[in-house]
Length: 434
Ligand code: SF4
Image (cartoon, rainbow, N blue to C red):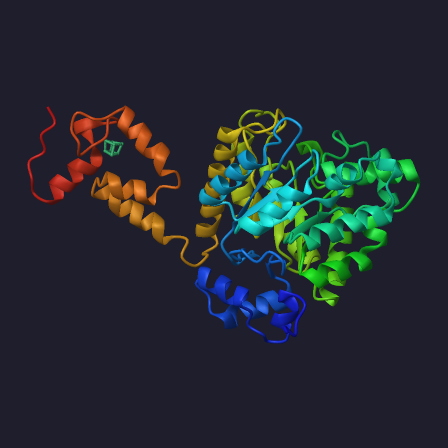
């Protein structure tokens, strides 16, 4: 019988769990280095005790930046096996977490399939599922209904849940008075807001937070404190609504830690580039170093179709400035449900952002692959270059489609290839160009 409830409690008692040992190995850290980070909440290991097939990962600003992919069955895409294929492909491509945002039919079988077959961390947003689970209108649901769905997800083995605990009835006046351009763009946040408006009651995720903590402690579910007031456009970035919610999230982080419950804090949102680093610093200070889980941030509002790029720019700056976890954004963001190609593009963009940030912040082991790539490029060793590439298939396809006349260069410069000229010059060889 284990004498700890959560990874955090184990770390605080000095117990090295098998999950912590695995994560330390992946991060090229000793368990002695990782243990205090988990004990203090600066790193989390999202691993529900019932998710027995999990290949555990750590999330923390000093660890490799992790990537989340949102998937799940919907009214238009409700074939579990197809969705499961997408999940496994996403994991194969490097996703560390899958958020099951299923929004149609009976969501239980797919969720259970995920926690019995998928090795990545599994996250959910229980409020999305509440309406579907009970098949009742939002305003007929009670606080107990919401909490029972959190328990159901915990029992099903979900590793982390997004809960929008940080808004309260005060937020209703704030949103009405502050006149944001985009009001609330968080789906879960808008549901909590609408529920409070319709019922006249306090946010149940805030009011019954202690009860929720007890459930999360029992199963070791990490709480991802949702950012209901994250800015939905540049004009709303770093405004009173966002910052006031963040302050409340800082208080809720402390309360969770008092019960050894692991916490991540979600963050912006759309945001001009020059505000990102400051936002990361404020979050780390207000939430005492709890891992920050960001969407993007999207650094401009005018690139629909390319928001995987706007998000990767912001994500790279955010992660280099301290964010620990990036939620992918696809080219379909703001436009449609992503298809398989969109999912792929979103994952690649997030991986680039995460890797670029890891190099900048000196995460162990991040830089070596770039040095290997440089060696392969200097040697004009194309196979070695593909081995180092984030997306080797695309790299190989582009080269194959436009093969050079001479195999030792590429069709960009041909015999004017600088690499080839330098290699030959330094070897004292004749350089034939014409
Ligand atoms: S041909 Fe030009 S682009 Fe291609 S490898 Fe040589 S220097 Fe680089």
